[in-house]
Length: 261
Ligand SMILES: C[S@@+](CC[C@H](N)C(=O)[O-])C[C@H]1O[C@@H](n2cnc3c(N)ncnc32)[C@H](O)[C@@H]1O
Image (cartoon, rainbow, N blue to C red):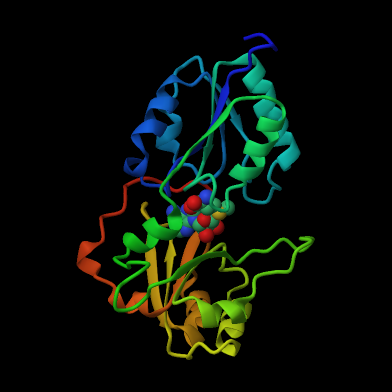
């Protein structure tokens, strides 16, 4: 490829872990890409789909190490687009949901590099589903909020208004919430949620080692500690948890989850 005609960067959702949750479009792009840039929470089975000639780059976070800084990832993507026709930027779940896909898309577009997003199945829907929990239900929840439990400390804008969410959203699906869980549940209770509000944690959803914990909100953080739950995990709060139909939960894939964040 010459500098004048850059290739296209596809921001591709890898889904939550079970390789069968990959979209057909993502599968096709993986099979034909010339370069692959991927994160930690991407199933290993998907990395094997790329052609032999594909140039691979890992830009995720390994246990005990910092993740690759975002400007470096942006630079890698721009460089690859100038040298290859089809570049796949593979991200866990959906690229535009707590995946920095928006930042990468804006950076590439500003440099005149063609960029296209390929949505993926997000962990916040799939992990509860693999535990039999619907995130909305006509009798139990007409609204659901996807929220991060891991706010950056140096963020310019104010953090999550947990007390406001307690009043305004029937259900909450919390990503990256385990680290701050005691503080989050305290805020939700202070915002008016009842101590016996149903809650669940699903660790390593859709893959081998999936575990589900059900507990009333007021007891959730202690139960997580006692049970030794860790990342990656999704927390669900609200009456939808009581609508769980365990019989509908698929068997998790017999696939190892990559190293936890
Ligand atoms: C940086 S966010 C990325 C979310 C991703 N873009 C998505 O749409 O699922 C990473 C967080 O997603 C959640 N997560 C990702 N994969 C998961 C899985 N298989 N089971 C449970 N939680 C998962 C965890 O809360 C994890 O800390």
